[in-house]
Length: 316
Image 1: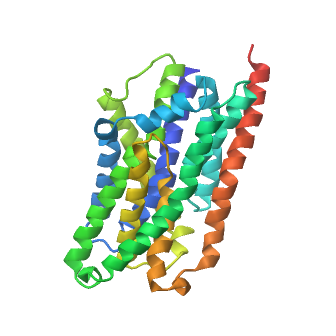
Image 2: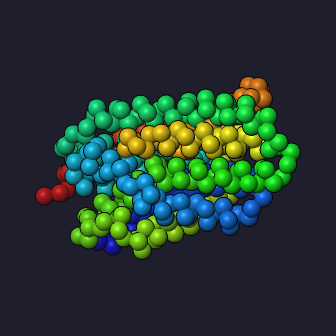
Image 3: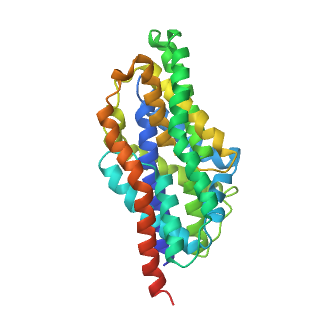
């Protein structure tokens, strides 16, 4: 049983790398002067130092403020893994955060308890706003970037985008990425080996390593997926989107509210491209992303509910 529970944690972290990390890297390697290896290292370091620098407030929201009981969280995690794998395989980065929120809420109901619906609603409301905040900020940042020599001078492009990517990676570690630590802490407790993630250096490094492996493995598939086809990206688009998404996601970390970096970044790309006019965006390619986001939460809720009912029926 312990091996199965640990396996769930490892697979979840890998899937986070494949979905979230692949989407982040697909932007980080565009219009860059640095090597892909450097970009990968920056992302891995951000994930590794996240708990020490930012704490685990968002992780605690997942583990103790939305649902009661470790079993609800564990069942929800398994359901979320299945959902996200289905989307990632098709090259569509969806929100693992939405999948996990819906699945743990459904699992809690199926297991006979009640999630904190008010807090869940608040979290979902902020999460829904994130793409639009990212879009607005990226449009404003794009106005500034258009007046800089960033699209003409290589050294400006390379240095600025690397800084923007580093900021985005840290924002992910401060907020959206903490779901990995929540899952690891819960599964470790279920397995009978509770851990203090803030002080377990080797464990944190292991999480960063598995996440990075997932990001590297899925980079090609996600990088050629729906997000990449939204527009013909220029350096200014990428930098504006990365900075805007970082601000949107950082802004909710202090509230302990998980917000999807994938959604915020996609909104940022659209907002940045609007500086070139609405026709610069291939709106037909927004459909797979919108459908994925719309389906993920209710699918997670239903899946968690059904599996929760099954588990509740077989548990003495």
